[in-house]
Length: 306
Image 1 (cartoon, rainbow, N blue to C red):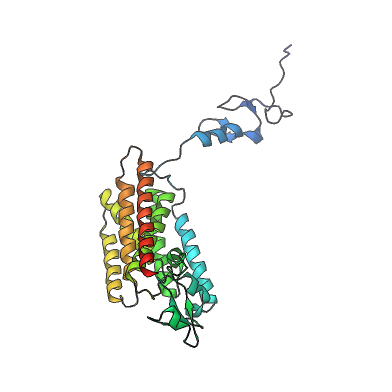
Image 2 (tube, helix red, strand yellow; image 1 turned 120 degrees about the vertical axis):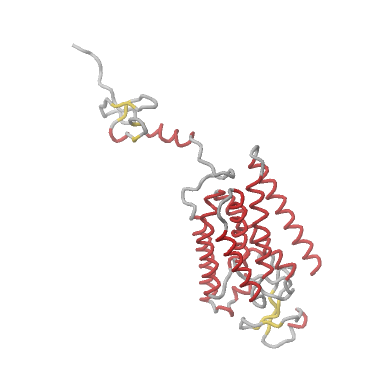
């Protein structure tokens, strides 16, 4: 008569079982069985395998996102939330618009919002009934360089920009990875803000994600040329936007569009053409240098205004 004791699950000692984990060979009960490529594994080995398996990478070093549309969806949600806040608090007369829009030196704005006096300096504004001074980047509101990228007033403006982000963003994120895509979007938008800061009127007011959107167009164009893909539709999209910008240059920020396009092209060139050996280091160093140049341009322009 056999004296062998029945095997029990290592996680549930009270449960008799004859099934072994294919990886560690410990006994597991039906509740602990996890489907594997061959047979079953225990929960501990499944977790260990998930930690040890390297995430797939894009051709440019980034982790391949499971959902390449996620970052664009979050950015769209932020832009729409800001637009709703501004709309709900008065639209062009909203105090939030005054805080978030990019004005290089500030402007003399009506107390109800929506109107401002071009060329009027802060000292003069204090003498104009019904008007108050709203600070700009150089006069104490540097956050406007970033917040203006997420700010819209008109439904058509936010709608067109978000539609472009919806179509362009996932393609670029799938190509370069989430972190690199977000870096390109934000940094090219910031380059667009710097162009506005240098080239727009010192008492102007600028809003919109268009600089970052032009950055996506420039970035995708570089990637398409790199892989020798058909980029005729991108050129058509870019050409259409250039025509709209030129025709509407009186009320459209060509400065932000140009800066965003330049920033997107430069960042994409860095991501796509960095040496394969130690690619992440080259890319990180290149982005840091570009960020330093942007910061230097901001400081230089501020010194000319104050």
